[in-house]
Image (cartoon, rainbow over all chains, first blue to last red; front, side, top):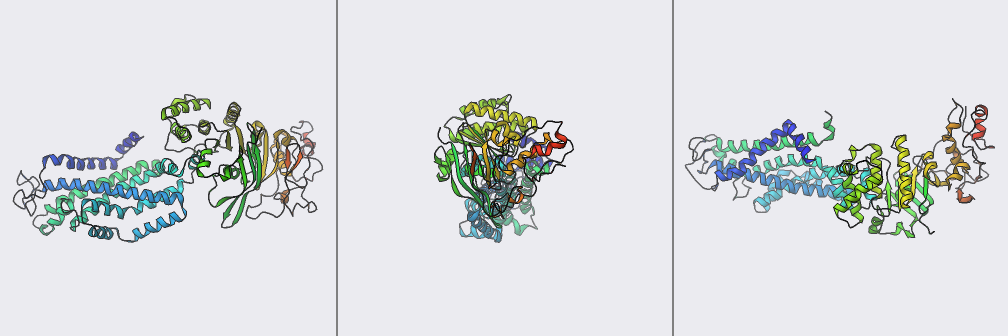
Length: 278
Length: 357
């Protein structure tokens, strides 16, 4: 079944493009560490060497003379790490809240949906900034903050799927076989509710990466970690003299966000039964 | 022989915004060990709600208000959650009308039956799988090992219903509840499935509660039948007796409406006039009174609901005007059909409204 899904994805043009872009970024993050193994914070050469000028620093150096390539590779790792793990947090929280609300309805549902609404009425980014500012900025707190602000849409989606699916006859049938609530939720309803959640998660990763970049641009990233947002933030005063300092990590962000968006779209085509007939 | 399944005074009511719908109101019935009881009635008469009540599968806004459901002496309504879960699927199993929607679409048929077995039996996945193949073979599925690996939508309707039966039989239940098991199937497949159910029942000595609106199905496999109308049982008895000597006017009407073989060509099909009363606005007296050819004010048909009383051995009916109809002609000779069909079909001395043009 997973093999069939992969085949379907590769046949889908946007999903294939997304997968290829994603592979490039993962490749850069993994193998780049070997070629550019240095500390991204170390001043390794003259400041503001343009890309291509010096083969020691193929992508140039920033205002402090730090190697751009090393920084970009480190940023790719951070982006992927924070994007994936914060989405995982958001998905777990969203699925739990949505599943409980949709399955049990009643006061549990009312309570969980009010909590969701509170989160949805506060602007996501502002909340993330506040959360990171309260706790000390680090990879863990940034991940946690992004995860916490992005679970409500998943919760709503899962809840609506559960409300529909719990009335299906196969759930009743499983109930007559003597299954308990936990088993019903996990083995019967959840697998059927998952496809749209997967699509949403893929798109969520892209948003999370952007949020992380924005946070580190504002100086709210982990001070020990070189991320794309940090590089852009540091280079923003030289944007006229040396645009590449902001431009290169900017392009990197565009590529990775595009990759996850294309992948999400492709997954939607592959998993959404309503679009199958086209 | 002790009592097997005894439902006594069951009331399942739905508390809706429009009022209380008494979907099942004071229903009592018995399924005997190894016997088959058919619960007959039209859509909305409360058959399925009765069945679901037995396994306590009623969801809000429905509630079981009163009654006892004794299964081998244990009142199922008094069991805790663990207790009822141990009954469901293990000792009492249920099969559904639409086998496609009763299977989880994202799991293979085999995996679902394995799960059903492992819910109640401590066996390894491998042992359970061997049992699945065995079960699928028992219900007559060709190349069972391959079919077990298929997803439900890949099987045909009849095949799916067979798989559904295999799923229900996974833990060798003592009682099988079949909720319109053949309604969604075509006629030839229906006959096969019924035969299969009958064979399996005899082989395993299961009790069978068969819910249907198809009198043909009743005649084929049930030994006793209970007729439901608007949430109540109006007549209950051995099938042979009930079919030949129906005593409640509703049963008579139902039987007349299927005896179309006896009608002259071009005749209007017999029907029961009127409509089933809304469950939200039940009349004060007998629920059938408004449509009943025999209803009379003197007998109290419009004032009280009739009690359930025996009219013959093991044959009970809830009607003030109950009388055993003379032996019902199941088939009328073709030659006298043209002129005498109507009187021959209907119990005499009845100002019966079933029109025969």
